Amino acid sequence: MPNTHPTPVRLEAKDAPNQPPVTPELVELYRGFSEEMLIPLWYEIGDLMPFHPMSKAAPHLWRWQNLIKLAEKAGEIVAVGRGGERRAIALANPTLGGRPYATPTLWAAIQYLCPEEIAPYHRHTQNAFRFVVEGEGVWTVVNSDPVPMRRGDFLPQGGWAWHAHQNPSQHSMAWIDGLDIPFQYEIESTFFEFGPEELDALETPDVSRAEMLWGRPGLTPLSFVGPTPKSPLLAYRWEFTDAALRDQLQLEKAGHAVTVEPGHAAVRYTNPNTGLDVLPTIRTEFHRIAAGSETAPLKETGSSVFQVFDGAGSVTIGDSHWNVERGDMFVVPSWVPFSAQADAGQDGSDSGHLDLFRFSDCPIFEKLDLARVEVEKN
Image (cartoon, rainbow, N blue to C red; front, side):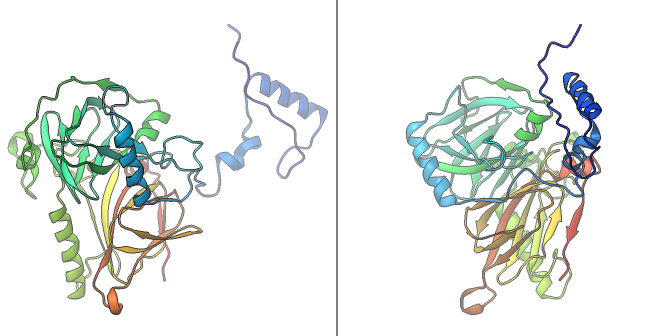
């Protein structure tokens, strides 16, 4: 059957460098290409194959004070329940066409749950996590396992797991969500399903079942030995993250080369069953920059979202430079240089530091053999 779709292709013969001379024959050729919805490589090679990545996303900063105020207002006006499902407010990068995307592959949002509210069960193919920058009192329930959420905790949840949230406390709570929604939307792999209306796990334990099984380093339950693409550990607690970063910097002071660079401690959240990333499409890390220290400018393929967990300092992303403080969130696009500096301690001392939680799409690029990193040497 003949093609009945109207053609969106409109090729125009132009007198431009590296293009064929404009002739009546070329004009006629381009008309034929347009009618058949064909585009020759020579017409768009500069856009399709640039010399280095040219991200559609822009560096951008969201202030936590503004985010939390708007989330609190939404809590007064917008109910949680079927339809909207979550009171999650996505960060929209200003150069991505008004879509709720922080980067072309990553979705980030502030989620807010009021006292005695329940966000109902659902599941989706998107991989997700929660990171708590302040507060406590909410339990996320993953496949009927209630998991407490507290400041500094990182809580991954792989795709197609039933999950809900309940706040049995008398205080509202906010946290950030990260998902691979844009990536899965663009590659057309998304599935979504509503779950039961009633929550089947209203208990509020101090420790989840997943932590009881998987929360002891280097010890794998024999009944679960074998690789899993998503981490079975549902909570990575702040006290362990904090201790790991603190010890790295202490060892550095003692003369041991254990940090990423001078004054820069970092850890990656990993799957205890494989040692790989906790989620197949999202990498999550925590970085601590000692007071007065600065990281070397770094460029890498793929994009990142950061949240300032604690401390104060400044970040430079391409041509953008911002002072940042607790809770602030910012985007680092693909192949745009990024560096961060922690403010000096009071009276010029080395006390204090800049803590940064980071998530990125690095696993996707590594699996496709497209990962590239370049560090600018001082």
